[in-house]
Length: 385
Image (cartoon, rainbow, N blue to C red; front, side, top):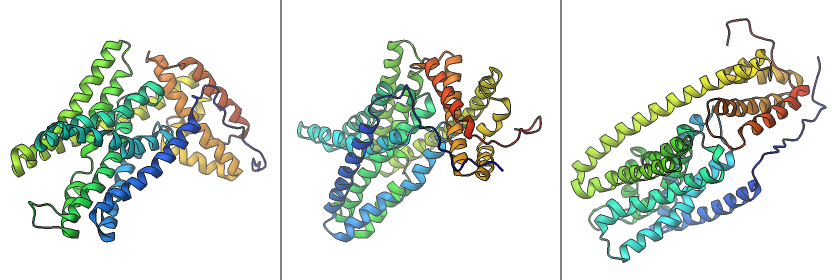
């Protein structure tokens, strides 16, 4: 049995890589550390170690499930982890740092508490969150290929914002409110039930409108259409947020219940749409790789081992017989095949992609250099996928 254990894979060199990767990673780490300190500071307004700990723990509890949902949605065509981390950190630190001073300024300029809650906060917060999606579209356009990518990026920003905001809410609840005869762990837990259990995806739902607009705008050649879509997306995000915040101000408990039902229905519809879009990505991947094989760029027998996750795992398990280098080669080959497939589909369907053809050939060249290390299972019988 041949082994590749003594061999070394060629370095991953992307000739078309965008500059600033290391700087982005460093900035994300620095901002994350600042954000962790900020979270502790916000939690400390509870006035006790118990309240601080409770605020931090309650803010963290919903995150694993919420982050898993976005990881699953992004699994077919995963974006670089550094950008997803940057999205979350932006929401938790930068967006809060932008929105909070704006809201304070609105209050000092005379906006009363009701208007600030119902209108001022949605305007400031959706702008602060949506700014990251806009910067991503301008700086790294290939990160957002469509609506699903827009939903993932905007959702991660919103999750970060919600987590930091929740720390403050739980700490304030621990202290108690004048109009509510409860405080301490009891009040913080009640707030956690409302925000952490019954509405953990509220902020992602609001900002999803911006993400959808970004996903649609990336396919428009007209600058007027692109900016028009972005403006509509922002207004829709502000509107959804205003419905949520303003419902209890205007309609009290009944108003909040009605708003919750309406927004829950929208969230359900958004979730179904996201799942359908993810399923369509599998079809695009299969179709594009089949066309790539027809052109002779890869062997047709490779396609099944590059599309569905079960087959991908089988291919990696088969490569494990030849050592860890073979496994790494298959993993890298599958990742590059996914990237080139979606890029090829975009080019063939007329979607504007920066450096599309050049990047396609560069990716195919990197795949070719992996072939000496590649050990894929034998070809499947005809008709099997």
